[in-house]
Length: 292
Length: 301
Image 1: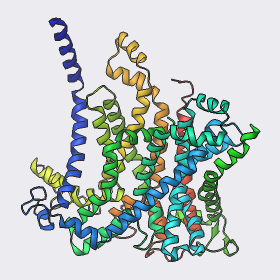
Image 2: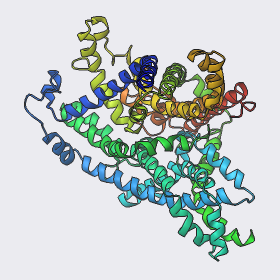
Image 3: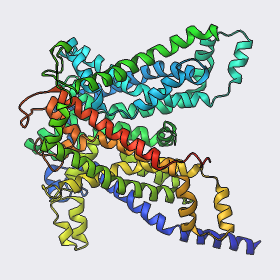
Image 4: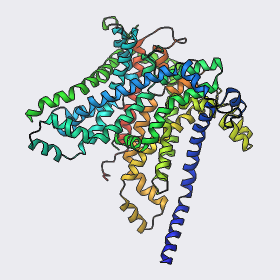
């Protein structure tokens, strides 16, 4: 028994030693990431003078929460933040309501055009935004919807949904294909119409796939930059990414570096918190949408 | 089957409509626009003047656009080599049976969920800062003064700084694609190889790499797609509009269409459209080449 234990211990130790170079490499990389994010977090609680004196992580004058208060109230961050929150949540909900039924039909029924739609959606994921933005911008400015804050916001949500429809549908199609058909067969025998079967049985069963794709869409829309930059030109409609860019530029004149780092933290905090709790699901979502 | 016709139509229509409005129609119109001279992007088709391939000729003879394409090519090639090798290395390490696999994987992917504007700001205002920056303090502490004194954000070093920062953000994503491929390889192959006396490096060279051909294709395609849309990083790293060190085609197009346009005198939406077509063709070209060079049909696993 003792001998066995010893052998196990030595095998394990040998294995770990063999993996040592691997450990060192990934640990260094992870360390760098932590230093980068950790320093920015510290700097956001520091003052501009302390940052330039190289004392951002030592807090000689204590924690400065007022950086956050200042960024939140005076630099429009609260407005950008609320805009992004509304855009992301509304788009995510509508995306599910639009794409889940389509994905279900594509996964379950054979009909003319099924393959064509799936191929079309898959290729759309490789289309650069630059290829579609000009005509879209043309239509949008012709309609005159950019004059009004509310219609501007609606147009933005419409675009966010549109560009994420292909990915969401393809992801959910793979997901529905992997759910067993027996549930629908049982429902059909009991006389449940197919549409009701979908909403009452299949939709709830796909919950984990729906959650994964929603988190992914949320992060994508939260971080979207190019379309927002073109379509959301005024402060009332800007999402955080575009707003932050404007703030960095104005910060160069006012010299408020700690306030800028606070704004950076505010911008990346929501997606970071999501990631802290749901990183496994997010990682699953990355590879789920791609057929290797 | 007939009974379900209504359901198929009802369930598909919204998604397909969005697809037609956001993708199909704009793509076709952009292709068409690229052959015309169009003064305003909102102009009706009647106001367009057909110029054939003149837009493409103009583009190729514009030195700023050529610089932008060259920058993009350098990002694609050098960045691609760095990102692909680093992400493959991490992918292999992550799947080699180390402890805390999930933790390492999650942290390496982390930069991908951070807004690119925030991430680029962190690099620019912290890592590359000449006064209190990470590189400055780190290399000074090691007494590598020549490295510590590199002015990362000046004209000569800006492109390299941009490339390093961008690659850092992209490694995690491609690592995940590699890992998903490696994890699908059956452990039987490695067992058989082990019995035959192959070491880790042999196993990697003769089992892992050949079986990852398809995944490599996916990786290159995804890399090309994201590269073509290279915009935020370039915009943040440029101190003036149209800075030649960091300009990319997308930035050029943005300036041409929507920007202050201090370098462009005439506005031609057709020219901007032709940039889109050129970039899309690049993606298609890379995709086709990958499919031709890396046939993996015979390797089903």
